[in-house]
Length: 463
Image (tube, rainbow, N blue to C red; front, top):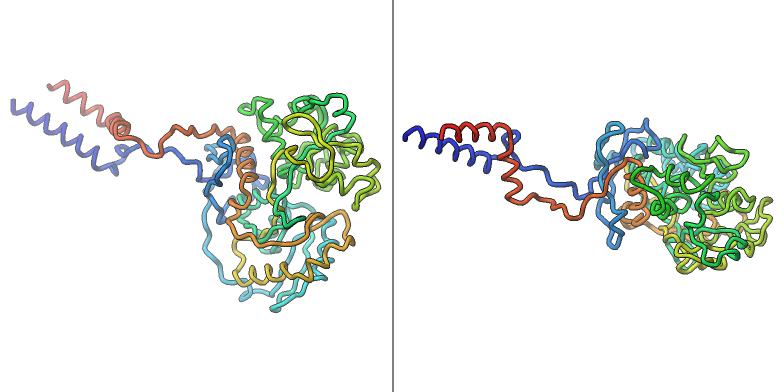
């Protein structure tokens, strides 16, 4: 009888320890399911595998009103070592240790445009503005990370890569007609295609040829992929496979080495570099004009700007705007007028000017004051600039980004994250999972620990 009492006492003692001392190895409650707010960078999407990974300060809050199927979720292990996003320590102000330069990184022919911009600036506070030329956006991002440059203007899709992989943040954004700080992503097709089938939709373009302004750009790639994934088994495919399985040929040059899709870029097949004739919004429209594609994913005003009657018409601008129409995602076509209404694939936040997270407050203040100079803005858009713009051709002003970069990018960032998850084969986080296990589950997990189970079996045997 005494032995029986001793055994029962030991059993209750063990139960008490496992319930109230979860710090004992293996006896604590199971970790809460991830809420989807801790962002990790999966290997397959990283355009710079040699880079150090994300170290910048990013906004991790979820933007209200976003669709559940594109909400950010964490990537699983696999594809290389992952590093969590961390907030770096603020370094000493740059002006204390180096020459007071502001170096704007210009990609390829943007360098000429950049020099013209710089000549219009009122350079103040002893800072000297310079243009730094690089051949790709990837090289510019590396240069900014290494302290060789300070600023770059980016499409929202590429801005997400800069945020997550290069520790950068948006400090200013472009402003368009009527003070708009966003633009619409559209698909443009040949008018004759719409006339043959008045109810035509995106799904009817399966097996046809597509033109994209650039891999990982918001309008040229991310928004179209977000729509195309409903027509293929996205759970078994990455973004390249989704697009290439839907279209028979694809022209989507890339600013990142080895990341483009260029089976449909004509004689440029295989090169797929950002130096392609078909890079950017105008390049995607050129691809359509030269009949290399049946559909082009571009900004709402691109066809108006680069058609034969447009203000930025080129030698390849041999067709009128009237020869094309907007393709509506829900079906049907619409005349191209610059106002596509509901005939859009999504609203995209305005392009941003980005800097490294380590930029000092003093330098950032000088940069913003200079960019916001009214005289410069009014003199900038006189029609003297060429095709390759540091700021997009429809820009009419500059505004300060007052949000965290992730919040500013909003839906565009969520779509980028969703594509990143597809590439990493990350399943969506079930909304039914609780962030904290209930008492019964936690207790069960403790009791199921091998050591506790073994002792419990011994006790039962003695009894």
